[in-house]
Length: 372
Ligand SMILES: *[C@@H]1O[C@H](CO)[C@@H](O)[C@H](O)[C@H]1NC(C)=O
Ligand SMILES: *[C@@H]1O[C@H](CO)[C@@H](O)[C@H](O)[C@H]1NC(C)=O
Ligand SMILES: *[C@@H]1O[C@H](CO)[C@@H](O)[C@H](O)[C@H]1NC(C)=O
Ligand SMILES: *[C@@H]1O[C@H](CO)[C@@H](O)[C@H](O)[C@H]1NC(C)=O
Ligand SMILES: *[C@@H]1O[C@H](CO)[C@@H](O)[C@H](O)[C@H]1NC(C)=O
Ligand SMILES: *[C@@H]1O[C@H](CO)[C@@H](O)[C@H](O)[C@H]1NC(C)=O
Image (cartoon, rainbow, N blue to C red; front, side):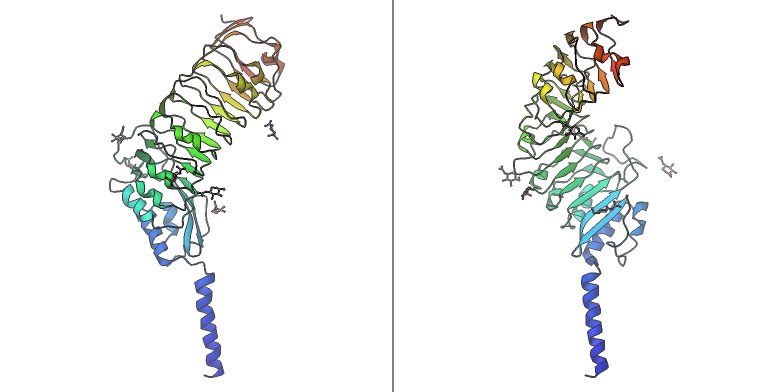
């Protein structure tokens, strides 16, 4: 072998090595899966950049709409944000032109294709017009840590096998048409921190199994038809935000964990008094319990919590006088106590002119106010 041949050999060996290892080139089977997904999604214009199987899909620069991240020749993160936001709250399970994908779209075959991206850790498929029941085989994406399918036209039940996805940290299924009951999903081996099922048509009781997922920091199940009673939330020691607005819940207000920051329980049928210990939720910033059937008085301590900025008690049956020397937190910007049965005088700290804050107190029997 001549000198020149040796150089040539070394050079081509280097080329093979370089292209194979350093090019971050996607396995061709993974590229094919992505191109099939593009076909399933009926060629949205955001995916025009995925030209053909010779395009290196990992190194196309990402945008806010489309983002593919790869590791060791496998897709690990896939984000596609479409431009088909859900319009209206009626969907009868049939394709709607210009809103959902066509009648020939099949969520089943879409997820079957998707499940071949076995290394996926992050999957965001939002506002793409996907419609149909969410197939149980979604759980085969066992490496997923973040799953967001919000703002589509998914209906039926949430597949119970989602609870076997033990790596899942955030789950977003909001703004869809899920209309089953919420399965008793999770147990203590779940690592879920954020759960959003908001704005669906979920029925039945609040799933008590949620109380064993102590990693949860945020739960949003607002705007559904969840009914019945709530158990104590104090066991969820990491919980910072609970949003159960606009449901059909009808217990007394449950106990809350010490670290809670935002609590939204408006437009349900909660009754009884506001628990005294809410006045010790030191980190609380926002509290909305408006449009319920609460009685008794509001704990004075709530008004002086160090970071409280928003409090809404409107349209309940709170009664009695407010403490005349009520002390308010300097952070407090909004208080609505209107349409209750409060009597007596409005404490000086709540007179609108006294500080940079909005106070609504109409519809009570407060002395000095116009309405009685
Ligand atoms: C794409 O995803 C990667 C990994 O999560 C992230 O670091 C990057 O900011 C994303 N790019 C855009 C434009 O969102
Ligand atoms: C859920 O919605 C679908 C599509 O509108 C409908 O066919 C189905 O009967 C509904 N199921 C329940 C339990 O309401
Ligand atoms: C759908 O969009 C196309 C193009 O924007 C328009 O020509 C067509 O009339 C729309 N169809 C419906 C049913 O809105
Ligand atoms: C929790 O659920 C997972 C998945 O279904 C299961 O593998 C595990 O054994 C369950 N753990 C407990 C403590 O029940
Ligand atoms: C859950 O998270 C903890 C800490 O982040 C980790 O040690 C554990 O392996 C995770 N469990 C699962 C099933 O992923
Ligand atoms: C109040 O808010 C400030 C600023 O966000 C924060 O640093 C502080 O820890 C909060 N205090 C409590 C008791 O949560």
